[in-house]
Image 1 (tube, helix red, strand yellow):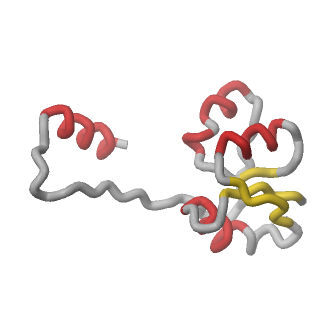
Image 2 (cartoon, rainbow, N blue to C red):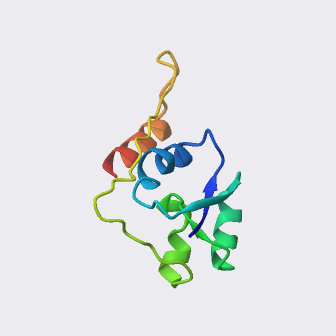
Length: 104
């Protein structure tokens, strides 16, 4: 099973290495790629399976160009952190942005 992955050092690759590969013993990482768009195109061309953030492939999932494969017993979720300088002015636009992302 050829697997197309992000480059070493990326958060997505870390999750793949720590979680996914132990559930897919027959997977062979055939290419480490720096751009998510390139992985999407290669998967669309049937070169291999890819593992990308869901938000990167939302359009392709909605059109049916790509399909999501669920692997039972595995959690591929990631934690995202928002950081800012504590002395920075927090404008109304900034606060609106913070409110929106905290709702999700």
